[in-house]
Length: 636
Image (cartoon, rainbow, N blue to C red):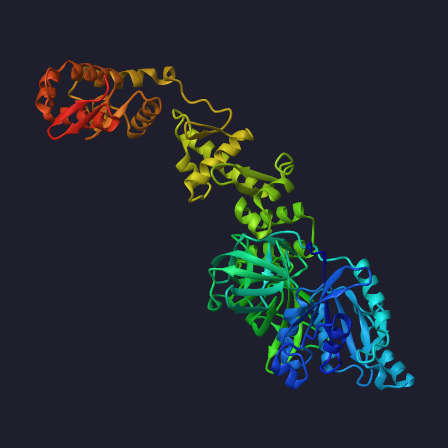
């Protein structure tokens, strides 16, 4: 049977004993007080979940959260995945402490849709009901629920329930559901074992979708599993999508390997971190938050202690918003746009909240890095389109592997490259392509180009006879410790015609090395001197001394000849010109019998001093191969 749940989650909120669970049962027929302890206490401790069929026939999810202040942790876990809220206020009690705290938490979590339910109207008269409604309006003024409907009901008698269903229908149809594109991401709110099936986890799917047989990761531990089967509200499905209450049976995972607060996610898409880039909003009635203050962080279904590292001020004042990094005491896994709550831990009071902007941040090491981070967070806080978000990340990181940039944006490399496809031609970024694609900001690429061109200009002045600067020296000039990336970068700059890059050497586009004619007499003198020596090859030092060249002259001539493969230096520093090398090859092929050191010495009329380096050089080129005391000629 096809399952047609509409991916929309409605959460309850409100003070303890205001009738949230009874209201959910009246709407859905499901009793969310599922634990014996809850039955005994008469209150919800854990999260309760129920499918709710709207008058239109669409099925949405309702999450019933606990109202007691001791269980705010569970309330935040439930609210983390909701699209809209029913704020429940008892007509006989009116607004109470957890009513206010829940409303503040919902606002901090970025909830925008909802309505208010005045419950238990069967217990009050008309005058008291009007007082409760006025009390609610005063509380809601200026909040996201300020202009939303207030619906009086009795969950016990059923009065007003049809009107509430109609309003919920309107709310669902008119509300803009959260954008949940991207990689699969499910914060675990329950984990349990079912005999014959194994470990099952439940939660609200926040991003993407998952299919039976998909490979997933359990984070932060990093265990890898496959989805054995899926259910949405007890109905078997092949695919679970964002916005649905999902139960996933995990293959090969024990109950000890997954717990509430973990995340089940698409493989290789999310990174556990102890540094979360964020924007924090402090409640208007809270005490200021100081730099490095220790607070309890609630994000998704996880909670941990965290230090608040403020980036541009010493403290956040009531009602202010600021860029910050949350430095957690243990790794947590978040998604971009994950909302969070901050509470003091003695006493337990909600003081602030906000949104994660970059789930795996890095501590800035300098003022320049801190200023760049603040600019980056301000840009992303405005929720720009994907292309601008990626460009902002590249500008901030300056140089970043494409795979890392895609993971940090929680999309595939293909999706990301499609989004920025026009940016390279406009000069906004550079793309160094190789076995790994690397993205470079336009500003950083301009800086590298300027630095490299200055280094090449200096190199050409010092070595006018050389074709160009070797790539490993270029890597040092631009402070890149990665030789492979340096070559890919040089290829990119050559494509942009900022330099020439051939034979692993870089040069300025208009540079022409000395032609042999410009100092042919020096080169010819060296060649003549060495060739006349025959197999009594001179060393570099002997040639320099005999010809009266300076060390700088000799260095230029040797570099010039070696780059053109017109000279080799063999063991011992001997100079070997092609004329001698070719003659030696001929003599080797003419030797009758075994090629031994003695045979070579006799054939060339030289001594062991020269014959051995020549043989070793030919070994290194693969022309000969040594076997014991003999050589085998591999090439003729």
